[in-house]
Length: 248
Image (cartoon, rainbow, N blue to C red; front, side):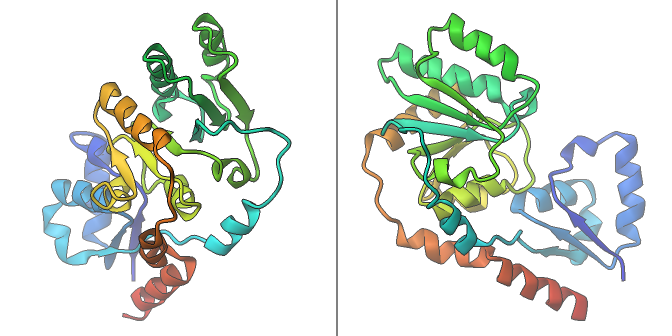
């Protein structure tokens, strides 16, 4: 058996050497595993004749472990009107656009706090821009955190302006702590949003600002639907699907 497990959308392979290379791989495959609707669509757009080989297996997560780690105490006092971004601070992740959203929010009179959890190439230049915009008091760079959940649980929403993702695990982790997300239309976000119930998909800065305000200004309630939905994203579920695949 030859199983190809595709962890991201591959539309950028079109008309490149990778398109021919993957055509060879997939033609020899027994099964092709995708991790999201967007990933599967990107594969079938390029290789429609591989439809019968496609199978979906979502990434699995240890939710009990995430919740337990979120209970760790922190020394910082997180203001109640806080939002965050988690991941590498770089152009591909849209970190510069995320900061721009905060600038627009403050311009509109919404003095929210932004926490960047992670590090990367744009960190230095973003810190300079923060000073230029007079946002030093409101933007916090926490660097890489082995346990981001102890901060994440205090946030009103997770913000991501990323250009591309496979299946963004940090969104899943946020939902497990009852924190919704505002995100660009990247891989996996369609399933996780559930038509806007658990997160909002945005297509421009104005829409992103509007959705962030919506989350910050309303009181968060424990969403029982999220817990039920996340069951299919548990590590146990992924193991079951993997075993089924190998035994088929």
